[in-house]
Length: 366
Image 1 (spheres, rainbow, N blue to C red):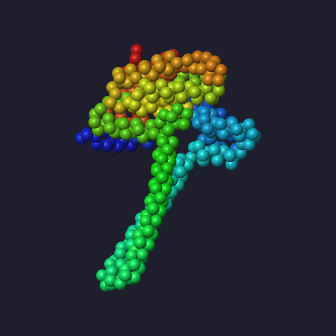
Image 2: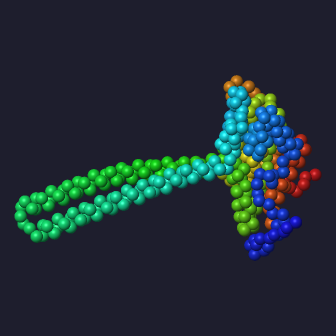
Image 3: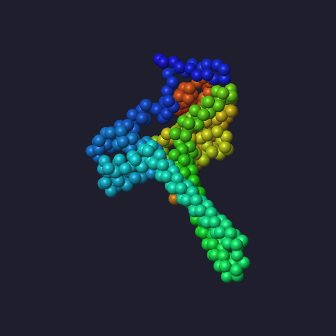
């Protein structure tokens, strides 16, 4: 195995088998992922579609129910008996392709550039208009210094008045055009900020998504390594979520995910980062947090979730309570992000094995 190293605060930390941090680095339940894969392939076969990466990604996402908008569009196609390769490709491009967000940013960037060019044109026109008025003033000054004839003076003054009025009108038009451009630029800036938020936000829970979690964890590890500060990670999974989803439907399942997202935000109160990293899987990054403190946060989250009863909004039907299992790990010096994730996920698996609705942390509990 190739071993590399990097310098940290005057020391060198060996890093074996370095991998890029990504979704595939998370240890997931093999049985569940294989079941989702089988469902995806069966759907591909049922509709006579090619088993290419795009089709597989769409149907795997449908089976995992991780993107409500994607599931709704596919459900609508199935109901209308309109499932086709073209529709599947369109759904892939709209919901799963990383190019989509880049295109949106490029379009906003082009519009911003056009507005900047327009503002430059307005400024150049204003400068030219100002120069024209200065030329008229200089000419008038020369003519007035050479004559005392009443009619000549009157003509010069009238010319100046006309020039000044024209300058005022152009200045007013320039101000209006500049204000309009300013409004367009501000709207584009908001759209760009919204696009950035959308690319980093889970649409169901409004928490950070997996992409942002990867980046945030990398940065948190870098900071912890440089400063020698503690860093902890929680991995959270909703207990028996598939059973709940199958019994009560995807909409109620999404309500449960939103409930967990709200509970995480309240528990953290701005300290740390909460993210949805999978279908019913969540992660919490806790900078400057020792293991014992992280365990207390995890217990707070677990009891908060357990204390809430799920109701069907339309009928006020009581659907019972949900619970979560949580694995907690603290960053160790020179540890990679994937190794930290792996340990937190192993503790989560132990919490499931020991009966669920538990928090498991390091060191190993007896």
